[in-house]
Length: 111
Length: 116
Image (cartoon, rainbow over the protein chains, first blue to last red):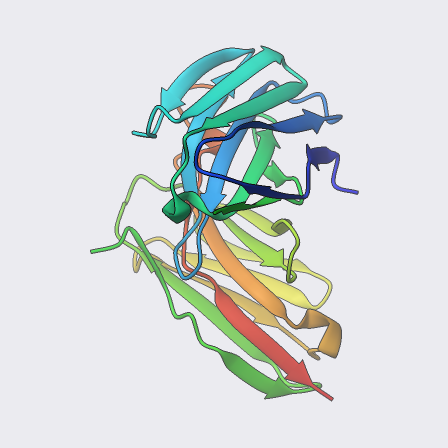
């Protein structure tokens, strides 16, 4: 248990579906992040939230839509994805030091 | 040129060996340096966190940072089969507000196998 919980752990969706990924952190951190991990590529930062406000969108396509209702919860809403969006999506939170703490990730497959 | 370069391996060593993992980087603004361990089908786990140049030791793990050469290393002593995982280096600028510490730039990861 890392203190950052992601659900679901696995998700298979069609290109016309709409689904959401959920992240919850119990560490009291104010900053939360979405990262994408694709095969043979480094982890890529997607979105940054600080005190519920989005502070960064790293040129992510609009078919990915984040939501942060409070400092403990983060969602990633997915719609009309492409097969190349299949990846491990990781949520992380961070205090004002000591790096980021990651959840176990959601393994997404787009068919 | 990638901001962070890491040899993806794979690296295979016998149990008890000393393992050396390395990353180079190009952005001189990076001040905070981390090593993560990622087991198969799991999220990355923070192993070591260092600020600026120098060494940091935690049990069998030693992290070294040489900012003048833009080079960081992780040494694992007395390696165990349970150390078999992907090791990711990561770094951040760590300034300009509270979110910057978690805005990480990662290397590609090195796959390590320690065989009995």
